[in-house]
Length: 196
Image (cartoon, rainbow, N blue to C red):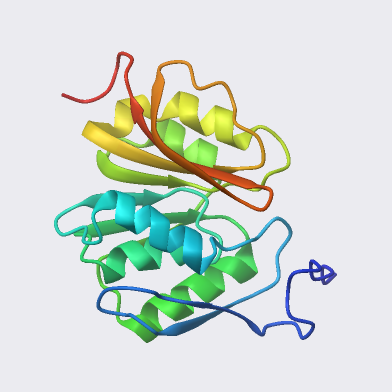
């Protein structure tokens, strides 16, 4: 049964689009489907984020845990990330991610069909930059943050988007901003269990 498009979406199903704003794939337009809770990071916020990260991500290993439209993961790949793992479980969204990966020729991107938290709990890989932009409903962000330290490389950055900040005990918020109802920030882990 098709889901109703959110008010911010274009009226015709399948016409949602995002634009890569920097790097190798700059100006490429990527379509994505309507899906409950799916709201791509706006261009202006992505621009701010990649200013914080230094524009280029050459050699960095990135995780886009709740990939959705793929805005953050494809942007990271466009900016030279050595590896980008995108985790998503919604079937139509997965199909769009795979189609866009093929369209871009993004060979550094690995798309994983899985529940984000279950995948995170068994992950043994290390990442330098982690993007967390889960659906706002529920406490997925808090649960994901609790599971991150073991898979973080030394000095790894975690970017978060949320309607309300969760408990950030153990985390240092390096930068933050707000766009409408969305709070976003760049975190680093200051507690134990981060990779050395």
